[in-house]
Length: 481
Ligand SMILES: Nc1ncnc2c1ncn2[C@@H]1O[C@H](COP(=O)(O)OP(=O)(O)OP(=O)(O)O)[C@@H](O)[C@H]1O
Ligand SMILES: [Mg+2]
Image 1: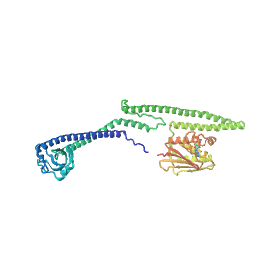
Image 2: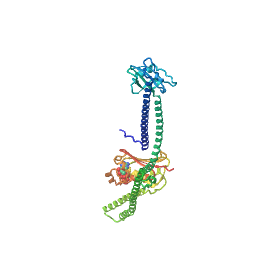
Image 3: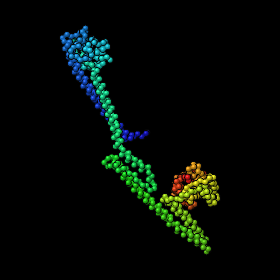
Image 4: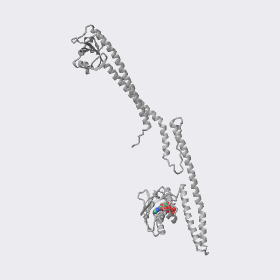
């Protein structure tokens, strides 16, 4: 079932107004036409009665029979068009009417037949007498038991008057309709215009990104549209209050995020020095030359490696905090082919039990950015392909600039792939796909977060697709112009 289609308010208001006015015009028109018609019929009925009386008087004592024509037609005082006929024992025998030249031509047989068929009584009725005479109002005036005279007056005048009235009413109604339609349209537009401005303000806000970053929510409904005495003004006022609240909430959110970021970045920064000291002292003690028991030597080695790992984590956190703060990275020309080849040969040296392949174009591929961070991105991807796949896995690293707009690096491995439940979140911080294995391999789940953060800071994009036997990490960076 489709939803009920809603019309815009503007159109409904105009349509409703026009419909009401059409209806009123129709009612007024019908009432005036019908009342005028009944007034005029009443009048002609009175005239008919008088004409009947005059005719009866002119006939006098001498009752006409079938041989007499309706001579009473010509009698003084009858108006033009007056019709007269004689009926003997219910049969119309002869008739005539008074024409424009005051002659009284006889009715033809057809017209007589129409009179006969009209079954005329002592109450006036309307009948049609064909095309030449038109409609008539007729009445019978009995003279004695056998003979009656029929008198008629033409309805042509009344009909013409009514037609004229209908025409006038129609023209006036049409004019009123057009005027009121245009007026309603203009009025509705005028009154709804503030609503459009309020809508525009709300729409602007709805297209803004509010969920991150420092949002300056400066949009407000204009003051003119916030008058609490009008309906639209109240909407505008409510929207402005809401925007004020949202703006405050966004500022509060931003300032607390800023605080957390500063805390992480300060804390990581502060941790670097003591970590360096721990590592330094452990190294110093192990190298001191004095004979130390094996288990102590092992413990010192662990202290060194763990503090090195902790230093890496702290460096990663510091980098992420700086990326969050939007701190500018280096902006130099970076040639990617060499960078990719270096990273792959490092990986090959670190893991000989994997098969490492590299495909780079002959020509240099240059982007603008921070060489150290971009190298770290490739290293992180290669480290994942090494750490999260079994020995014997083939890893293909390919660099291309096919689109002429972007440099694209893909790292593809034929390892077991990423768990489909986890794939949507692998770029998030501290997310590790297989936690049991990850814990033993000592991973923290920051590698891909850094990949994404660094690539985004370069205006690029990072993505992953994975199925068992084929995992592809793809990053693209805008080429240097
Ligand atoms: N090539 C890959 N094959 C299979 N799983 C992968 C691959 N790359 C990443 N993953 C999964 O994605 C998760 C997140 O990767 P990420 O690099 O962010 O963290 P990590 O490697 O676990 O830790 P870190 O890189 O910080 O040492 C990994 O724990 C792993 O489960
Ligand atoms: Mg990793």
